[in-house]
Image 1 (tube, rainbow, N blue to C red):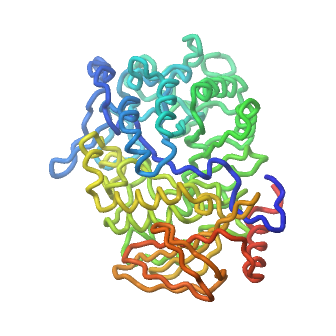
Image 2: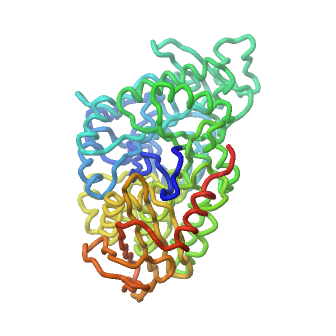
Image 3: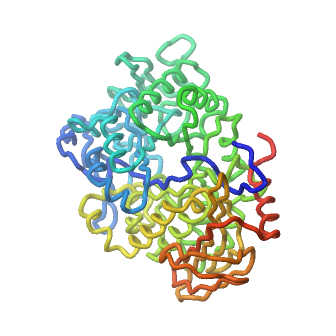
Length: 538
Protein backbone atom coordinates (compact mmCIF):
# COMPACT_ATOMS: atom_id res chain seq x y z
CA UNK A 1 0.00 0.00 0.00
CA UNK A 2 1.30 3.45 -0.89
CA UNK A 3 2.22 5.76 1.94
CA UNK A 4 -0.45 8.28 2.83
CA UNK A 5 0.18 11.97 3.15
CA UNK A 6 -1.50 14.02 5.84
CA UNK A 7 -4.18 15.08 3.36
CA UNK A 8 -4.93 11.55 2.09
CA UNK A 9 -8.15 9.91 3.19
CA UNK A 10 -9.43 6.68 1.67
CA UNK A 11 -10.71 3.28 2.65
CA UNK A 12 -8.78 1.38 0.02
CA UNK A 13 -6.74 1.86 -3.14
CA UNK A 14 -7.52 -1.66 -4.37
CA UNK A 15 -8.66 -1.34 -8.02
CA UNK A 16 -11.23 -4.13 -7.64
CA UNK A 17 -13.01 -2.07 -4.96
CA UNK A 18 -14.60 -0.16 -7.83
CA UNK A 19 -16.51 -3.27 -8.89
CA UNK A 20 -20.05 -4.43 -8.09
CA UNK A 21 -20.47 -8.16 -8.58
CA UNK A 22 -23.44 -10.14 -9.89
CA UNK A 23 -23.11 -13.81 -8.92
CA UNK A 24 -24.47 -16.32 -11.43
CA UNK A 25 -24.80 -20.05 -10.86
CA UNK A 26 -24.25 -20.61 -14.55
CA UNK A 27 -26.41 -23.70 -15.11
CA UNK A 28 -29.37 -22.01 -13.40
CA UNK A 29 -29.33 -18.65 -15.16
CA UNK A 30 -30.43 -18.94 -18.79
CA UNK A 31 -30.25 -21.80 -21.30
CA UNK A 32 -28.96 -19.80 -24.24
CA UNK A 33 -27.92 -22.82 -26.35
CA UNK A 34 -29.96 -26.03 -26.00
CA UNK A 35 -27.50 -27.87 -28.27
CA UNK A 36 -25.03 -28.19 -25.35
CA UNK A 37 -27.57 -29.59 -22.87
CA UNK A 38 -26.45 -33.25 -23.28
CA UNK A 39 -29.87 -34.43 -22.17
CA UNK A 40 -29.07 -38.08 -22.88
CA UNK A 41 -25.86 -38.10 -20.82
CA UNK A 42 -25.26 -40.52 -17.95
CA UNK A 43 -26.77 -43.82 -19.02
CA UNK A 44 -28.03 -45.54 -15.83
CA UNK A 45 -27.05 -42.39 -13.91
CA UNK A 46 -28.80 -39.63 -15.92
CA UNK A 47 -27.73 -36.02 -15.49
CA UNK A 48 -30.44 -33.77 -16.97
CA UNK A 49 -33.52 -32.56 -15.07
CA UNK A 50 -33.24 -34.68 -11.92
CA UNK A 51 -36.04 -33.47 -9.67
CA UNK A 52 -36.48 -33.73 -5.91
CA UNK A 53 -40.16 -33.58 -4.97
CA UNK A 54 -41.22 -31.08 -2.34
CA UNK A 55 -44.45 -30.03 -0.63
CA UNK A 56 -47.48 -28.67 -2.46
CA UNK A 57 -46.24 -29.77 -5.86
CA UNK A 58 -42.92 -27.93 -5.57
CA UNK A 59 -39.63 -29.45 -6.62
CA UNK A 60 -35.91 -28.84 -6.48
CA UNK A 61 -33.50 -30.02 -9.14
CA UNK A 62 -30.08 -31.66 -8.77
CA UNK A 63 -29.51 -32.25 -12.48
CA UNK A 64 -28.38 -29.97 -15.27
CA UNK A 65 -30.94 -27.47 -16.53
CA UNK A 66 -29.03 -25.95 -19.45
CA UNK A 67 -27.64 -22.60 -18.32
CA UNK A 68 -24.48 -21.78 -20.26
CA UNK A 69 -22.12 -19.08 -21.48
CA UNK A 70 -24.52 -18.07 -24.25
CA UNK A 71 -27.30 -17.46 -21.73
CA UNK A 72 -25.08 -15.07 -19.76
CA UNK A 73 -23.73 -13.23 -22.81
CA UNK A 74 -27.24 -12.80 -24.18
CA UNK A 75 -28.13 -11.01 -20.94
CA UNK A 76 -24.88 -9.16 -20.35
CA UNK A 77 -26.58 -5.90 -21.26
CA UNK A 78 -29.23 -6.57 -18.63
CA UNK A 79 -26.58 -7.14 -15.95
CA UNK A 80 -24.57 -4.10 -16.94
CA UNK A 81 -27.63 -1.85 -17.17
CA UNK A 82 -28.63 -2.97 -13.68
CA UNK A 83 -25.41 -1.36 -12.42
CA UNK A 84 -22.98 -4.27 -12.15
CA UNK A 85 -19.46 -4.26 -13.52
CA UNK A 86 -18.34 -7.85 -12.84
CA UNK A 87 -19.98 -11.25 -13.11
CA UNK A 88 -18.88 -14.08 -10.82
CA UNK A 89 -19.56 -17.44 -12.47
CA UNK A 90 -19.40 -20.89 -10.90
CA UNK A 91 -16.47 -23.21 -11.81
CA UNK A 92 -16.04 -24.08 -15.46
CA UNK A 93 -13.83 -27.19 -15.27
CA UNK A 94 -14.89 -30.61 -16.51
CA UNK A 95 -17.34 -32.53 -14.31
CA UNK A 96 -18.35 -36.22 -14.17
CA UNK A 97 -20.74 -37.36 -16.89
CA UNK A 98 -23.06 -39.20 -14.48
CA UNK A 99 -24.93 -38.40 -11.31
CA UNK A 100 -23.33 -39.65 -8.11
CA UNK A 101 -24.55 -43.00 -6.81
CA UNK A 102 -23.03 -42.82 -3.32
CA UNK A 103 -23.44 -40.67 -0.24
CA UNK A 104 -26.72 -39.81 1.41
CA UNK A 105 -29.77 -39.37 -0.83
CA UNK A 106 -30.54 -35.75 -1.67
CA UNK A 107 -33.99 -34.82 -0.41
CA UNK A 108 -36.09 -31.68 -0.11
CA UNK A 109 -34.30 -29.24 2.22
CA UNK A 110 -31.30 -31.49 2.92
CA UNK A 111 -27.69 -30.29 3.11
CA UNK A 112 -24.44 -32.04 2.10
CA UNK A 113 -26.48 -34.87 0.60
CA UNK A 114 -25.16 -35.87 -2.80
CA UNK A 115 -26.74 -39.15 -3.94
CA UNK A 116 -28.44 -38.48 -7.24
CA UNK A 117 -26.74 -35.11 -7.68
CA UNK A 118 -24.75 -34.01 -10.71
CA UNK A 119 -21.89 -31.57 -11.15
CA UNK A 120 -24.19 -28.89 -12.62
CA UNK A 121 -22.74 -26.46 -10.04
CA UNK A 122 -19.15 -26.95 -11.21
CA UNK A 123 -17.52 -27.82 -7.87
CA UNK A 124 -16.77 -31.50 -8.72
CA UNK A 125 -13.77 -31.09 -11.03
CA UNK A 126 -12.14 -34.09 -12.66
CA UNK A 127 -10.03 -32.30 -15.30
CA UNK A 128 -9.12 -28.76 -14.26
CA UNK A 129 -7.54 -27.97 -17.64
CA UNK A 130 -10.64 -28.85 -19.64
CA UNK A 131 -13.81 -26.82 -20.09
CA UNK A 132 -16.99 -28.64 -19.14
CA UNK A 133 -19.02 -29.50 -22.23
CA UNK A 134 -22.27 -28.00 -20.91
CA UNK A 135 -20.94 -24.42 -21.07
CA UNK A 136 -19.51 -23.45 -24.48
CA UNK A 137 -21.15 -22.91 -27.85
CA UNK A 138 -19.52 -22.70 -31.30
CA UNK A 139 -17.27 -19.65 -31.23
CA UNK A 140 -17.90 -19.14 -27.51
CA UNK A 141 -15.28 -21.04 -25.53
CA UNK A 142 -14.06 -19.50 -22.27
CA UNK A 143 -11.75 -17.02 -24.00
CA UNK A 144 -14.61 -16.05 -26.31
CA UNK A 145 -16.91 -15.69 -23.32
CA UNK A 146 -14.60 -13.32 -21.45
CA UNK A 147 -14.12 -11.26 -24.63
CA UNK A 148 -17.86 -11.04 -25.19
CA UNK A 149 -18.45 -9.99 -21.59
CA UNK A 150 -15.69 -7.41 -21.91
CA UNK A 151 -17.44 -6.02 -24.98
CA UNK A 152 -20.38 -5.30 -22.64
CA UNK A 153 -18.12 -3.65 -20.05
CA UNK A 154 -18.19 -6.63 -17.68
CA UNK A 155 -15.26 -8.40 -16.03
CA UNK A 156 -15.42 -12.13 -15.27
CA UNK A 157 -14.72 -13.43 -11.77
CA UNK A 158 -13.94 -17.13 -11.98
CA UNK A 159 -14.90 -19.44 -9.12
CA UNK A 160 -12.15 -21.97 -8.43
CA UNK A 161 -11.76 -25.06 -6.24
CA UNK A 162 -8.42 -26.24 -4.84
CA UNK A 163 -9.54 -28.17 -1.77
CA UNK A 164 -11.26 -31.08 -3.47
CA UNK A 165 -12.34 -32.82 -6.63
CA UNK A 166 -15.41 -34.95 -7.28
CA UNK A 167 -17.19 -37.35 -4.89
CA UNK A 168 -14.88 -40.31 -4.52
CA UNK A 169 -16.25 -43.15 -2.40
CA UNK A 170 -19.39 -44.87 -1.03
CA UNK A 171 -20.55 -45.79 -4.55
CA UNK A 172 -22.32 -49.19 -4.63
CA UNK A 173 -20.08 -49.98 -7.57
CA UNK A 174 -17.32 -47.79 -9.06
CA UNK A 175 -18.47 -45.18 -11.55
CA UNK A 176 -16.17 -43.88 -14.27
CA UNK A 177 -14.61 -40.46 -13.55
CA UNK A 178 -15.76 -40.04 -9.92
CA UNK A 179 -12.74 -39.70 -7.62
CA UNK A 180 -10.36 -39.26 -10.53
CA UNK A 181 -8.16 -36.34 -11.65
CA UNK A 182 -6.88 -36.03 -15.20
CA UNK A 183 -3.80 -34.12 -16.31
CA UNK A 184 -3.29 -31.45 -18.91
CA UNK A 185 -2.89 -34.04 -21.66
CA UNK A 186 -5.74 -36.24 -20.49
CA UNK A 187 -3.59 -38.67 -18.52
CA UNK A 188 -4.93 -40.16 -15.27
CA UNK A 189 -3.10 -38.49 -12.37
CA UNK A 190 -5.17 -39.65 -9.40
CA UNK A 191 -7.82 -42.21 -8.56
CA UNK A 192 -9.59 -42.66 -5.22
CA UNK A 193 -10.73 -46.10 -6.45
CA UNK A 194 -13.99 -45.86 -4.47
CA UNK A 195 -12.01 -46.35 -1.24
CA UNK A 196 -12.75 -44.47 1.98
CA UNK A 197 -9.93 -42.03 2.77
CA UNK A 198 -8.46 -44.09 5.60
CA UNK A 199 -7.89 -46.98 3.17
CA UNK A 200 -5.83 -44.93 0.74
CA UNK A 201 -2.12 -45.70 0.56
CA UNK A 202 -0.33 -42.58 -0.74
CA UNK A 203 3.06 -43.96 0.26
CA UNK A 204 2.94 -46.88 -2.17
CA UNK A 205 0.17 -46.11 -4.68
CA UNK A 206 1.02 -43.18 -6.98
CA UNK A 207 -2.68 -42.72 -7.84
CA UNK A 208 -3.45 -41.98 -4.18
CA UNK A 209 -0.80 -39.29 -3.65
CA UNK A 210 -3.06 -36.45 -4.72
CA UNK A 211 -5.35 -37.15 -1.77
CA UNK A 212 -5.36 -36.95 1.99
CA UNK A 213 -5.95 -40.21 3.81
CA UNK A 214 -8.53 -38.52 6.05
CA UNK A 215 -12.12 -37.41 5.45
CA UNK A 216 -12.83 -33.93 4.14
CA UNK A 217 -16.14 -32.41 3.03
CA UNK A 218 -18.92 -34.98 2.48
CA UNK A 219 -17.56 -37.80 0.26
CA UNK A 220 -15.40 -35.50 -1.86
CA UNK A 221 -11.85 -36.39 -2.81
CA UNK A 222 -9.68 -34.26 -0.52
CA UNK A 223 -6.52 -32.87 -2.11
CA UNK A 224 -3.19 -33.27 -0.31
CA UNK A 225 -2.18 -29.69 0.38
CA UNK A 226 1.48 -30.53 1.08
CA UNK A 227 2.07 -32.47 -2.15
CA UNK A 228 3.94 -30.09 -4.50
CA UNK A 229 2.36 -31.85 -7.48
CA UNK A 230 -1.08 -30.72 -6.29
CA UNK A 231 0.02 -27.08 -6.18
CA UNK A 232 1.69 -27.37 -9.58
CA UNK A 233 -1.42 -28.91 -11.11
CA UNK A 234 -3.92 -26.42 -9.70
CA UNK A 235 -1.82 -23.29 -10.18
CA UNK A 236 -1.07 -24.34 -13.75
CA UNK A 237 -4.73 -24.98 -14.51
CA UNK A 238 -5.97 -21.69 -13.11
CA UNK A 239 -3.15 -19.76 -14.78
CA UNK A 240 -4.53 -21.13 -18.06
CA UNK A 241 -8.01 -19.74 -17.37
CA UNK A 242 -6.58 -16.40 -16.25
CA UNK A 243 -4.69 -16.23 -19.52
CA UNK A 244 -8.04 -16.65 -21.27
CA UNK A 245 -9.48 -13.55 -19.67
CA UNK A 246 -10.62 -14.22 -16.11
CA UNK A 247 -10.08 -10.97 -14.23
CA UNK A 248 -10.27 -12.14 -10.60
CA UNK A 249 -10.73 -15.39 -8.66
CA UNK A 250 -13.23 -16.49 -6.03
CA UNK A 251 -11.81 -19.39 -4.02
CA UNK A 252 -14.17 -22.08 -2.77
CA UNK A 253 -13.67 -23.66 0.70
CA UNK A 254 -10.55 -21.60 1.42
CA UNK A 255 -10.78 -22.42 5.11
CA UNK A 256 -10.26 -26.15 4.51
CA UNK A 257 -6.63 -25.70 3.40
CA UNK A 258 -3.75 -24.22 5.43
CA UNK A 259 -2.35 -20.74 5.04
CA UNK A 260 0.99 -22.11 3.80
CA UNK A 261 -0.76 -23.51 0.73
CA UNK A 262 -2.52 -20.23 -0.02
CA UNK A 263 0.68 -18.20 0.31
CA UNK A 264 2.42 -20.46 -2.18
CA UNK A 265 -0.60 -20.49 -4.51
CA UNK A 266 -1.04 -16.71 -4.44
CA UNK A 267 2.68 -16.09 -4.97
CA UNK A 268 2.70 -18.47 -7.93
CA UNK A 269 -0.18 -16.77 -9.73
CA UNK A 270 0.80 -13.20 -8.90
CA UNK A 271 4.39 -13.70 -10.04
CA UNK A 272 3.19 -13.04 -13.59
CA UNK A 273 -0.03 -11.23 -12.65
CA UNK A 274 0.85 -8.57 -10.06
CA UNK A 275 -2.18 -7.31 -8.18
CA UNK A 276 -4.43 -10.27 -9.06
CA UNK A 277 -7.50 -9.93 -6.82
CA UNK A 278 -8.75 -13.04 -5.09
CA UNK A 279 -11.39 -13.58 -2.43
CA UNK A 280 -12.21 -16.74 -0.55
CA UNK A 281 -15.17 -18.46 1.06
CA UNK A 282 -14.62 -19.45 4.68
CA UNK A 283 -18.14 -20.15 5.95
CA UNK A 284 -17.46 -18.81 9.45
CA UNK A 285 -19.07 -15.93 11.33
CA UNK A 286 -15.99 -15.32 13.50
CA UNK A 287 -14.06 -12.37 12.04
CA UNK A 288 -10.89 -13.27 13.93
CA UNK A 289 -10.76 -16.63 12.17
CA UNK A 290 -11.51 -15.57 8.62
CA UNK A 291 -9.38 -12.41 8.77
CA UNK A 292 -6.12 -14.36 8.73
CA UNK A 293 -6.62 -15.11 5.03
CA UNK A 294 -6.34 -11.39 4.28
CA UNK A 295 -2.88 -10.97 5.80
CA UNK A 296 0.03 -10.77 3.39
CA UNK A 297 1.95 -13.52 5.12
CA UNK A 298 -0.95 -15.87 4.31
CA UNK A 299 -1.37 -14.81 0.70
CA UNK A 300 -3.21 -11.49 1.00
CA UNK A 301 -6.54 -12.96 -0.13
CA UNK A 302 -9.77 -11.11 0.60
CA UNK A 303 -12.81 -12.97 1.94
CA UNK A 304 -16.56 -12.97 1.73
CA UNK A 305 -17.73 -11.06 4.79
CA UNK A 306 -19.71 -13.75 6.61
CA UNK A 307 -19.73 -11.95 9.99
CA UNK A 308 -21.36 -8.89 8.43
CA UNK A 309 -23.69 -11.12 6.40
CA UNK A 310 -25.15 -12.54 9.61
CA UNK A 311 -25.92 -9.01 10.83
CA UNK A 312 -27.38 -7.91 7.48
CA UNK A 313 -29.93 -10.72 7.59
CA UNK A 314 -30.75 -9.76 11.17
CA UNK A 315 -31.28 -6.10 10.24
CA UNK A 316 -32.97 -6.38 6.84
CA UNK A 317 -34.67 -9.75 7.14
CA UNK A 318 -37.19 -8.51 9.68
CA UNK A 319 -39.05 -5.19 10.01
CA UNK A 320 -37.77 -4.35 13.50
CA UNK A 321 -34.08 -4.80 12.65
CA UNK A 322 -31.83 -2.12 14.15
CA UNK A 323 -29.05 -0.48 12.13
CA UNK A 324 -26.99 -0.47 15.35
CA UNK A 325 -26.40 -4.21 14.92
CA UNK A 326 -24.22 -3.52 11.86
CA UNK A 327 -21.65 -1.24 13.47
CA UNK A 328 -19.64 -3.86 15.42
CA UNK A 329 -19.33 -6.06 12.33
CA UNK A 330 -17.81 -3.28 10.19
CA UNK A 331 -14.46 -3.37 12.03
CA UNK A 332 -13.59 0.13 10.86
CA UNK A 333 -11.13 0.56 13.72
CA UNK A 334 -8.63 -1.88 15.23
CA UNK A 335 -10.21 -4.83 13.46
CA UNK A 336 -8.58 -8.14 12.50
CA UNK A 337 -8.63 -7.70 8.71
CA UNK A 338 -5.73 -6.44 6.62
CA UNK A 339 -8.25 -3.95 5.26
CA UNK A 340 -12.01 -4.19 5.93
CA UNK A 341 -12.76 -2.08 2.86
CA UNK A 342 -11.56 -4.89 0.57
CA UNK A 343 -14.07 -7.45 1.86
CA UNK A 344 -16.87 -8.82 -0.31
CA UNK A 345 -20.21 -7.88 1.25
CA UNK A 346 -23.38 -9.92 0.67
CA UNK A 347 -26.54 -11.14 2.40
CA UNK A 348 -26.95 -14.63 0.88
CA UNK A 349 -25.59 -17.04 -1.71
CA UNK A 350 -26.00 -20.54 -3.18
CA UNK A 351 -24.85 -22.39 -0.04
CA UNK A 352 -27.27 -20.88 2.46
CA UNK A 353 -30.92 -19.87 2.55
CA UNK A 354 -31.69 -16.82 0.45
CA UNK A 355 -32.62 -13.82 2.54
CA UNK A 356 -36.17 -14.12 3.83
CA UNK A 357 -37.46 -10.56 3.59
CA UNK A 358 -40.22 -8.51 2.07
CA UNK A 359 -39.53 -6.32 -0.94
CA UNK A 360 -38.67 -3.43 1.37
CA UNK A 361 -36.04 -5.55 3.13
CA UNK A 362 -34.25 -6.21 -0.15
CA UNK A 363 -34.46 -2.53 -1.10
CA UNK A 364 -32.99 -1.47 2.26
CA UNK A 365 -30.26 -4.11 2.06
CA UNK A 366 -29.22 -2.91 -1.38
CA UNK A 367 -29.14 0.70 -0.25
CA UNK A 368 -26.72 -0.34 2.47
CA UNK A 369 -24.53 -2.65 0.36
CA UNK A 370 -23.97 -0.07 -2.36
CA UNK A 371 -23.12 2.82 -0.04
CA UNK A 372 -21.27 1.26 2.93
CA UNK A 373 -17.77 -0.16 3.08
CA UNK A 374 -16.93 -3.29 1.09
CA UNK A 375 -17.44 -4.63 -2.43
CA UNK A 376 -21.10 -5.61 -3.00
CA UNK A 377 -22.12 -9.05 -4.29
CA UNK A 378 -25.70 -9.86 -5.29
CA UNK A 379 -26.86 -13.43 -6.03
CA UNK A 380 -28.77 -13.92 -9.30
CA UNK A 381 -32.48 -13.29 -8.93
CA UNK A 382 -32.20 -11.13 -5.84
CA UNK A 383 -33.13 -8.15 -8.01
CA UNK A 384 -36.66 -9.59 -7.83
CA UNK A 385 -36.58 -11.42 -4.49
CA UNK A 386 -36.42 -14.75 -6.34
CA UNK A 387 -36.97 -17.82 -4.11
CA UNK A 388 -36.56 -15.70 -0.98
CA UNK A 389 -35.97 -17.69 2.20
CA UNK A 390 -35.19 -20.91 0.32
CA UNK A 391 -32.23 -23.15 1.15
CA UNK A 392 -30.31 -25.51 -1.11
CA UNK A 393 -32.53 -28.42 -2.21
CA UNK A 394 -35.56 -26.26 -1.45
CA UNK A 395 -35.35 -23.78 -4.32
CA UNK A 396 -32.23 -21.69 -3.59
CA UNK A 397 -30.66 -22.73 -6.90
CA UNK A 398 -33.77 -22.90 -9.05
CA UNK A 399 -33.64 -22.02 -12.72
CA UNK A 400 -34.16 -18.29 -13.35
CA UNK A 401 -34.69 -18.16 -17.10
CA UNK A 402 -35.26 -15.60 -19.81
CA UNK A 403 -38.91 -14.94 -18.97
CA UNK A 404 -38.04 -13.90 -15.41
CA UNK A 405 -35.23 -11.67 -16.66
CA UNK A 406 -37.55 -9.99 -19.14
CA UNK A 407 -40.10 -9.41 -16.37
CA UNK A 408 -37.55 -8.33 -13.73
CA UNK A 409 -37.96 -4.55 -14.22
CA UNK A 410 -41.55 -4.91 -13.00
CA UNK A 411 -40.37 -6.00 -9.54
CA UNK A 412 -40.48 -3.28 -6.86
CA UNK A 413 -36.93 -4.33 -5.89
CA UNK A 414 -35.42 -3.87 -9.36
CA UNK A 415 -35.64 -0.08 -9.84
CA UNK A 416 -34.18 0.95 -6.48
CA UNK A 417 -31.31 -1.54 -6.92
CA UNK A 418 -30.53 -0.20 -10.37
CA UNK A 419 -30.63 3.37 -9.09
CA UNK A 420 -28.23 2.85 -6.17
CA UNK A 421 -25.90 0.48 -8.04
CA UNK A 422 -25.47 2.95 -10.86
CA UNK A 423 -24.80 5.73 -8.37
CA UNK A 424 -22.01 3.71 -6.74
CA UNK A 425 -20.61 3.08 -10.20
CA UNK A 426 -20.16 6.83 -10.66
CA UNK A 427 -18.83 7.70 -7.18
CA UNK A 428 -15.24 7.13 -6.08
CA UNK A 429 -16.24 7.95 -2.50
CA UNK A 430 -18.85 5.17 -2.39
CA UNK A 431 -16.41 2.74 -3.97
CA UNK A 432 -13.22 3.44 -2.01
CA UNK A 433 -13.93 6.11 0.58
CA UNK A 434 -13.14 5.96 4.27
CA UNK A 435 -16.35 5.42 6.27
CA UNK A 436 -17.11 7.81 9.11
CA UNK A 437 -20.28 6.87 10.95
CA UNK A 438 -22.47 9.60 12.42
CA UNK A 439 -25.26 7.38 13.70
CA UNK A 440 -26.55 3.88 13.08
CA UNK A 441 -29.65 3.47 15.20
CA UNK A 442 -33.12 2.08 14.75
CA UNK A 443 -34.36 2.76 11.22
CA UNK A 444 -31.73 5.45 10.50
CA UNK A 445 -28.18 5.22 9.21
CA UNK A 446 -26.10 8.34 8.62
CA UNK A 447 -22.47 8.14 7.57
CA UNK A 448 -19.85 9.72 5.36
CA UNK A 449 -17.61 8.10 2.76
CA UNK A 450 -14.48 10.20 2.13
CA UNK A 451 -11.96 9.87 -0.68
CA UNK A 452 -9.20 12.46 -0.90
CA UNK A 453 -6.02 11.53 -2.77
CA UNK A 454 -3.88 12.70 -5.70
CA UNK A 455 -6.04 15.76 -6.30
CA UNK A 456 -9.28 13.79 -6.40
CA UNK A 457 -11.66 14.84 -3.63
CA UNK A 458 -15.12 13.55 -2.95
CA UNK A 459 -17.13 13.21 0.24
CA UNK A 460 -20.46 11.38 0.16
CA UNK A 461 -22.98 11.91 2.92
CA UNK A 462 -25.37 8.94 3.05
CA UNK A 463 -28.80 9.05 4.70
CA UNK A 464 -30.73 5.76 4.93
CA UNK A 465 -34.27 5.29 6.19
CA UNK A 466 -35.54 1.72 6.55
CA UNK A 467 -38.76 2.79 8.21
CA UNK A 468 -42.23 2.58 6.72
CA UNK A 469 -42.76 6.35 6.79
CA UNK A 470 -40.74 9.21 5.33
CA UNK A 471 -38.69 11.21 7.79
CA UNK A 472 -36.75 14.42 7.90
CA UNK A 473 -33.12 13.74 8.80
CA UNK A 474 -30.61 16.37 9.85
CA UNK A 475 -26.81 16.28 10.07
CA UNK A 476 -24.44 18.66 11.80
CA UNK A 477 -21.58 16.39 12.90
CA UNK A 478 -18.44 16.72 10.78
CA UNK A 479 -20.39 18.67 8.19
CA UNK A 480 -18.45 21.00 5.92
CA UNK A 481 -19.93 24.35 5.01
CA UNK A 482 -20.29 24.97 1.31
CA UNK A 483 -21.95 23.45 -1.78
CA UNK A 484 -23.40 19.95 -1.40
CA UNK A 485 -24.79 18.28 -4.51
CA UNK A 486 -27.70 15.86 -4.48
CA UNK A 487 -26.19 12.76 -6.09
CA UNK A 488 -29.44 11.75 -7.78
CA UNK A 489 -30.93 15.05 -8.93
CA UNK A 490 -27.71 17.00 -9.38
CA UNK A 491 -29.14 20.01 -7.56
CA UNK A 492 -26.70 21.90 -5.34
CA UNK A 493 -27.50 23.58 -2.04
CA UNK A 494 -25.36 25.89 0.08
CA UNK A 495 -24.95 24.41 3.52
CA UNK A 496 -23.99 26.26 6.66
CA UNK A 497 -23.82 24.32 9.90
CA UNK A 498 -26.64 21.89 9.18
CA UNK A 499 -27.90 19.77 6.30
CA UNK A 500 -31.52 18.69 6.42
CA UNK A 501 -33.25 16.36 3.98
CA UNK A 502 -36.48 14.42 3.61
CA UNK A 503 -35.76 10.73 3.14
CA UNK A 504 -38.57 8.56 1.74
CA UNK A 505 -39.73 5.38 3.45
CA UNK A 506 -37.20 2.65 2.65
CA UNK A 507 -35.24 5.32 0.85
CA UNK A 508 -31.76 6.75 0.47
CA UNK A 509 -30.38 10.25 -0.05
CA UNK A 510 -26.75 10.88 -0.97
CA UNK A 511 -25.09 14.31 -1.04
CA UNK A 512 -21.66 14.94 -2.54
CA UNK A 513 -19.05 17.51 -1.57
CA UNK A 514 -16.17 17.93 -4.02
CA UNK A 515 -13.83 20.20 -2.08
CA UNK A 516 -11.03 19.56 0.44
CA UNK A 517 -12.15 18.97 4.02
CA UNK A 518 -11.15 21.78 6.38
CA UNK A 519 -12.89 21.16 9.72
CA UNK A 520 -10.26 20.34 12.31
CA UNK A 521 -12.46 17.91 14.26
CA UNK A 522 -13.27 16.06 11.05
CA UNK A 523 -9.64 15.83 10.01
CA UNK A 524 -8.59 14.58 13.45
CA UNK A 525 -11.25 11.89 13.32
CA UNK A 526 -10.26 10.88 9.80
CA UNK A 527 -6.58 10.76 10.74
CA UNK A 528 -7.54 8.39 13.54
CA UNK A 529 -9.60 6.19 11.22
CA UNK A 530 -6.77 6.06 8.70
CA UNK A 531 -4.32 4.99 11.39
CA UNK A 532 -6.60 2.33 12.85
CA UNK A 533 -8.32 0.76 9.84
CA UNK A 534 -5.65 -1.93 9.40
CA UNK A 535 -3.63 -4.01 11.89
CA UNK A 536 -0.36 -2.47 13.00
CA UNK A 537 1.64 -5.50 11.91
CA UNK A 538 1.04 -8.35 9.48
